[in-house]
Amino acid sequence: MKNKFRLLFTPGRKLDTDQLIFKKTVISFTVFFFMFGVALFGWMKLRQLPRDQMGTNTVIRSALNTNESIFSSILSDKHLSKSYPKSEAANPARRNGNVGMDLHKMVADFANWNMQVVKSNGDTLHITLADLKKLPKTEVVFNFKCIEGWSQITYWGGVKFADFIKAYGLEKETALKYIGLRTMDEKYYVGIDMASALHPQTILCYELNAQPLPIDQGYPLRLIIPVKYGVKHLKTIGTLVFSNDKPKDYWAERGYDYFTGL
Ligand SMILES: Nc1nc2c(c(=O)[nH]1)N[C@H]1C(S)=C(S)[C@@H](COP(=O)(O)O)O[C@H]1N2
Ligand SMILES: [Mo]
Image (tube, rainbow, N blue to C red; front, side, top):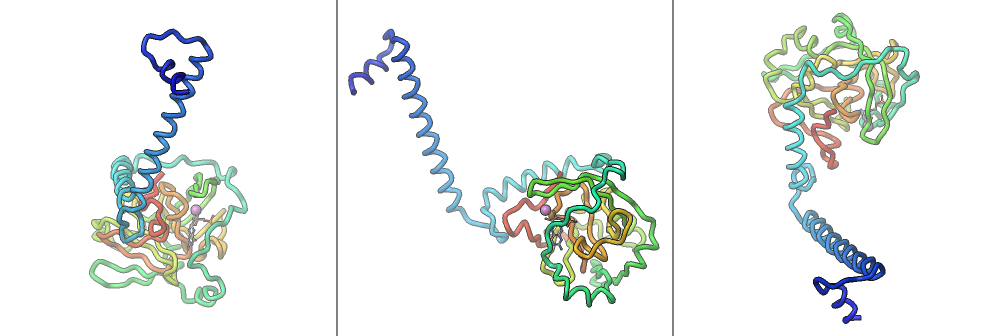
């Protein structure tokens, strides 16, 4: 056996086809086991690395943050998500995710529902659905994408976030880096970079397929933000805050990318 190997790997030696095949097989397996070893070692090292306050390994998080800076620099008002004709929209639209939407508790709460908007000077505005409906309505029909791997064309209506900012004199708040949204019970929460919030297709949404939002799709008000994956389209908004620090984010705490841009 030893001799056979020596023979195969003697430089300049002529080999027949069987010997050549055997030699290539030996090389391939050696390379395979070596790479496997490298990958295993790398994986074990990664697992030992410190984790950030969101519980994500710091190396992976820094890669995610690099992605975020690249993608946020290319996000612009001129890059709109593709729009579709209303006739292509799914009806009924798929429902997914109900963290922070404990329906029994909430149904009782809806009568007094309002969105709490915390301003940078600490004042809190209480905005009702009727208030929002007085503002111009914006409709979006886009391909809604969930990180679980499905997508669907959906048709939504509401108030453009940028219009809402103007109507309530919140321009000063938009100098901050992020908005944070939380459900009424604060069990689901997301943080969104200001540029994406102000994108012309981002709406505070109260209609799906030209009807009031179904209860399990965010009644009375949800976010629709076509430049992001589904996780950021928070249903049943309770509170809106503005902040320079990254607001806490439910799925980022569970290891997902914070930016989740499309
Ligand atoms: N309050 C709340 N909002 C949420 C979620 C959730 O679990 N709770 N899930 C998110 C996810 S992962 C997706 S894909 C969309 C699904 O919205 P839909 O039910 O209208 O399809 O809602 C997002 N908003
Ligand atoms: Mo999702």
